[in-house]
Amino acid sequence: MAKRIAKFHKVSFEQFRDGYLDAVGAGSEEEIRRIYDEIRLPKRATAGSAGYDFYAPVPIVLKPQETGKVPTGIRVEMDEDWVLQCYPRSGLGFKYRLQLNNTVGIIDSDYFYSDNEGHIFAKITNDSKEGKTVRIEPGTGFMQGIFMEYGITADDEVTAVRNGGFGSTSDS
Image (tube, rainbow, N blue to C red; front, top):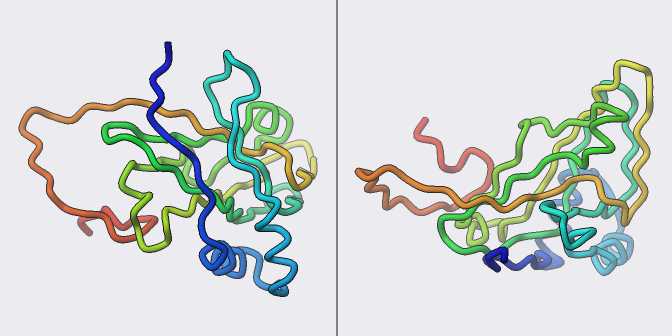
């Protein structure tokens, strides 16, 4: 039986609004509130699915070679020694070569506690070589997350604490 190690939550409205304005660029308070209220928590499609589908909060339209940043409105609380790995949904990768710009999104367990509430974003590119435009309607799965347990080396003595998002754990 699979271990139950995590729980998805929505970020606060304020955090979603800030992320939405950063990613999309504009929107009225009422429009952003409506989008926020309709955000669905990730779910598995079947009992045998490993991946939790993340649903598009807004329409996503990407022509070949175009990139978009998607504020999911989602954060995840998980046990230590676990990570959430994010990938494009298989069908979108197969049909459009839809890719996450960082190849695999890595969501660490301590990201939940960062200043941005652990808001998960996806930066995606339509890398179609066949001239296909990707159209993803709101509420449609576009990314999947898979929880993986990990280990550390016997001599690991890291005590640093995260306080940010992308690149916040780098020494440089």
